[in-house]
Amino acid sequence: MQNNTHEEGVKVYEIGYLFLSSIPKEKVAAETASLKDVLAKAGAVIIGEENPELITLAYQMTKKINGSYQRFDEAYFGWVKFELPSKAIESVKKSLDATENILRHILVTTVKENTYLGKRAPTFTVAARDMGMIAPEGAAPVPAVDAAIEKSGEPVVVAAANVEDMDKSIDAMVKGA
Image (tube, rainbow, N blue to C red; front, side, top):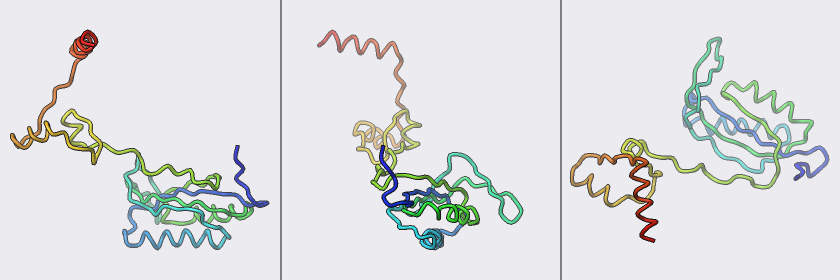
């Protein structure tokens, strides 16, 4: 197991945060700078970060703002990895809890090494799903399907294979081998 302390009392932390989607896009950078100021005032040394991007939330979240609950389906997600003396983390957590433009945040201890593996796996297009095909966004086009769409001008309906047809096809391949 790796130790996340390199000096006495200093730990490596990571915060993942969601800014309210009601923040204008041009002000998100200022909110990020404000969050990093909170960390700097506590004595944090930033190791890595990803600027916030607007994402669709997996479920609707609510936050009490000015006495009424507001619902959010989207938020700006970002993260910051930093080193900080463990005695100062409580003040950082209190500051983050008090920040009105943060919908939710998570603060965890981690290791200094880069554990980030890159962007998420490719997503699939709705059109391909609706046509019965699954193709990642940005995948190479399928010439036969594209040609059929160009000729007819309408989407090609691809029939789903049934188990019996697949079994027959596999048997034919096995016998031919």
